[in-house]
Image 1: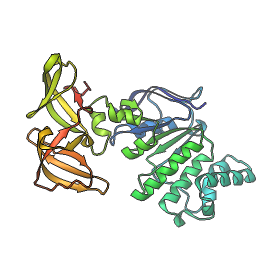
Image 2: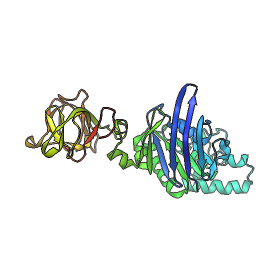
Image 3: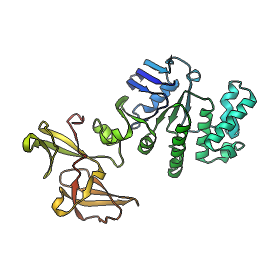
Image 4: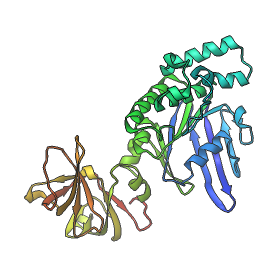
Length: 355
């Protein structure tokens, strides 16, 4: 069973700590996605798992083997890179089977396995073509096929779709989702694209400055972020953050106040300054008698299935983003009444931790 375990893994480049004491367990067959901003350590962590980077401290285990100092070719992993790295003078079939040729696998066995992989990826008709004759999506399938044919215990994907256009990314995302259902292998996938992370992952690992901020299922991270960083990183458009205060309410319960707005939070809480968070879809245009605040429309982005409205208010320096149905018409310069959904409130203390 290809269980992947990282024990206190650290990677330094001189004085720079790229990965700092990471502990993580990935179960056999699990699809785990690493996300985070550029320079957060997610790709370095992936390269360390693959053996392309040596660890500065800690251990890496695949199944029951300690592979910390094992050569990449002997770890039982296969890596798909952002660049396809196909040999231009080789056909699709030759590119896919190249690793088996190096391992001196018999030609008839290579041909059989190449055909099986091509069927899995639906590229049987492309086996005689050269990379220059393939589209970006087809080249990426060939690169994935080259990894599949080795029958690895762990697949590592390093932003494999970032070079594709938007439509191709959607199609390839579906292909990878189908692939994960067909292969009995552990998969670790690095991306900065939240949509890829939310739609593909069993669990998401959020990296920041070499540390893991939070690990959880996509919906868990979206609904219950552990801190300001995760709350702001997961979700598009991002959560609105508003400077606020906790004040005493009725029956011993507390309220959160920002500007002239005071909302009950339904429990006791220490008074003081906090950051109030609310996602764009948890704001709505309300009747005058039910609104919490007025916002002046600055920009409206009409996206077809929805519209994003950016509001200027007296209590937030940054515009407040609200998601509304496309049939609801609002215009720049208009002042509209807004209501905050009571069931989806987020509060963060001065250190950015969730309250």
